[in-house]
Amino acid sequence: MAAPDDNGPVVERLTPDLAQAFPPAAEDVFDHPPTAEHLGKLALMPGHALFVARGDGMIVGQLLAMVQFQADREPQLYIDNLGVAPALKRQGIARALFDAAMAWGKDAGCEGVWLATDVGNAEAQGFYRSLGFTREAADVYFGALG
Image: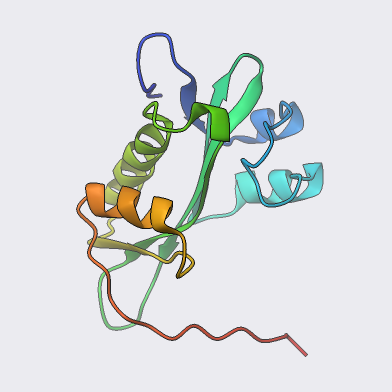
């Protein structure tokens, strides 16, 4: 486990036990309220890791990471989602979540990491640049299954 500082929230990976007793989440940490069903499945899903920051009895930050396997190259770590309670931003929580995910990805054999963010999300873009990420142009497509 890692923490932003000695008195800050504690960062940990979602386990089945934590999924069963998942604390409430601060506003704007997740896009939608997490469900017991989704948390339970996510805690057991190979190649997936939800890291959460817990403080004052609630979830104040989260980051979802996945190992993305390819047939023609080493695995890549994909950061799918990051959220920190607005009142607690700029206190090292996002960085602690990233540190935990990066260590997990390295242990899983990943050689690189990638992520995406909304075009107009200057706050996220600045944070990712501060971590040493560089921007690459891409087109993103969404569709339905069936």
